[in-house]
Image (cartoon, rainbow, N blue to C red; front, side, top):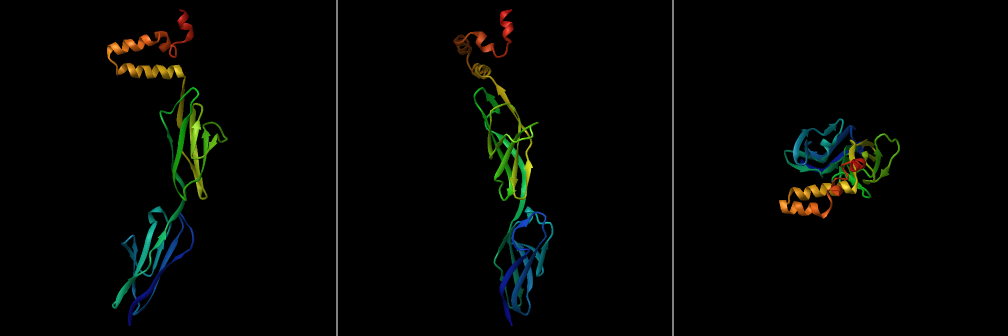
Length: 215
């Protein structure tokens, strides 16, 4: 009579686990009398029995698994095995650096992020109502206004993000917006000084049609 020894875990099927697969863990040990088997995930008890089957494996099942073999003479744990599920990109999101407004001669940088395993390495950028891609890579510089979205890809599939809007503005209008911001926080004397730096017509030009100045 002796306590458990040579406790180990085998996985079927072996190799890569894709989301939705069925996975079976088997615990083996050498003991006399035969041992009772318990399963633990990350140190937390999950099930009893020599066989542990998981149908429709998902990311919630990912983690470290060990089995414990126990009889009246003692107990022994197996080495931990790590199970990680592979899945296509999801939660694909585009973020915009800055205000999302393009000033003449500048660009706006868009960044695509996603949750996937393995990490997505291929990204494609599209402008709404255009069938062909307008760029690639995790970041994209938009040189014109419009609505843009990205697609993230790995070997298990792809997913597209919602579209984000990039707007355009002329440099005089941008300058006028900046001027309004300065005046809002300035004293009355300072506001007068700012207006005197340029004729009022200069500040209003982006907002008033050119023919109106001839009236």
